[in-house]
Amino acid sequence: MGYNLKIIRTSSYVEVWEYEHEIASDYSLPQKEAEKKIDTISFEESTEEEQLNRLKGMAKTRQNAKWTLLRLIDTNFDDKTSFLTLTTKENITNRNEFNKLFDKFITRLNYNVFGLKKRIIKYIAVLERQNRGSWHAHILLFDFPYVPHHKLLKIWKHGAVRINKVDVDSIDNRGRYVVKYFEKGIGQELLDSMGKKSFYASRTIKKLDVTKTKSDADNIFNDQEVIIENEFNAKYYKDGEFKDNKVIYKKYKI
Image (spheres, rainbow, N blue to C red):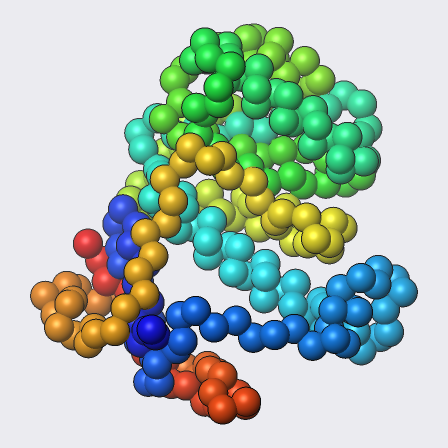
């Protein structure tokens, strides 16, 4: 089975990628032995060419992470969404150490707000380095009730807390508005912490609605307003080689 349409639906728009040539949905390109070897070598031990290729790959990963975040935010955003920032008094430069503090905070916050040990809290978070080298966290909380600032300080107990409700002038802008605060952290995570997640998301948030199918996009979305349309070339793998695959991208407003 294959597909020529990839469709992603969020709360306010639909994105469609229409491929000229069908893509095999269950095919994964085998990794070359040389590439496997590179994956086991640290960035500092890599050659200049290997470092350049890895940096290019990270730039693409960062861009993909940004778009995934934007779509997840648009899918989960509600009128009780809050933006929370956590910093520490101690200069914690070890990412794993800070990550443990962050994880314990989420557990305590969940229990204090919802009275449950099982996590039902909904969040997306990015870790970011401050100028002093210490890590801090930017967290987007969905469907989150009001919690007094002094209580949040007590739950965090490692330093400062800043929280505010996310208020945007347009539904279309909510993803872009929030993602700009995450971009720096995404880049640092990829460079300083290779192999680590570029962002964290709770299992309780709504997942992206992604469909891969064989059809004609015009037959499905002919009555929808197109707000963005682009055409570009991609690659698909067939008969042992990569071949050009023209892609028409359209974004429809719901």
